[in-house]
Length: 170
Length: 284
Image (cartoon, each protein chain N blue to C red):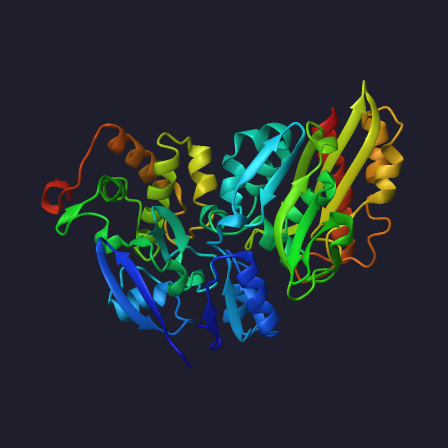
């Protein structure tokens, strides 16, 4: 079976690869590029663990072919903030305890980023509606919703990515 | 999970896409892919080739006013929600799109794809029935217009030819500014419509002069509830006339779907309740 050439800018780095057309974006990220921060949960486009940003908009990478993202810019959790720092959304999830096991967290953060880009000041109701496609089996969502609200506040105040040791528990 | 092997083709125009479909009867169109890819991953579908039409410029764009709307088949749910002119004339479209899937799905799924796929639990199928839409389908012999009442004919089945592509969807002036609503009972896990009812009413004073009601989720494929429509036309719209019409909402829908979550009897109940709620919210 023939392969196709895909050129995707992942976390700012443009890379070209030969892949089978059936290669899913999540497989490409995890298996070809070793970016395992994007998780595979349900693999049926329901749980949202595999959510990444494609050209700035949230997409479930288990339901996008790598070749469909050809020419696009993809952001994963690894590229969300410079290495060693936490993005304000990550800071908010930390401070509001918006995670327990952490499996859903990369997807939650991507969905949060996509939401806040479109709606910088969402209500709690809007946040819950927008998180509909991201499942968490630990938190009961309450702390995640708080983390999204906190994210909005931090971003509105002009917060920047900060070194982890200046955020975590300090 | 990954699909079976297939060839991938990305034409740059509708005519090129039609040529690819004509040349390969086992090829399928992919746009947003949020119905097709899950089916392929489950090995329920195994097309020999995918013809990716998502980037064809001719399929993009929305123009809407009180005199009607023309929507490119490649318009995503998100684009439909964000178009202010469309929302002003046909508010039920944005209302419904916000109930489809989740934000990531809405950014990729397309109106043309929803109508061509005719999932029995799709949402926009019912809305397009209520608004009296028509689709333009283009094939090797040119373009033709198909009224929405003549498009859906069975489970996942339309009157489109295998090498025809829906290129645009038109909404008539007659349904612009009508009283519209969509009520849905979502499956708690999947979010798909267990039952959904879209209504569009024209009124003169408080008298109903025209009614169109589309039902999804419960019937084999999205259909109009014509008995309920007939019960409304010429009547004053009151709680009583609406309730009487809603009781007729399952007439003519054929055998209803039943599954482990919702029996056919329960879906029949839902259709009546949702019809009443949609009519009430639209009209009263």
